[in-house]
Image (cartoon, rainbow, N blue to C red; front, top):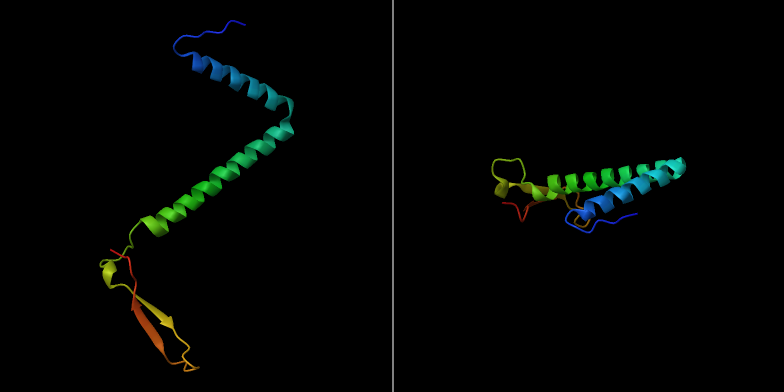
Length: 93
C-alpha cells in the first residue's frame, strides 16, 4: 500500500478508516445496531437538555415587563394557613 504524504493526505486516511469501520460493522450487525441506537439516544438526550436549558434559562420571559413579575407562595406560619407571601423574582431583566 502506497501512502500519500502531500496536502490532503488526511482525507485519504479518513476515508480508509471509514471503509474499515463499515466493514467491521457489516461483519457484526448486532454490535452495529447497538452502537447506532446508543449514539442516537445520546444525541437525542443532549439535544433535549440543551433545548430545555435554552428555553428556561437563556431566553427572557415572554411578558411585557419582566421586572414586575411577582412570585406568590404559601407560608405556614405556626399553622396560620391564611398567610401568603408575595415577593419579586430577582434576576429578571
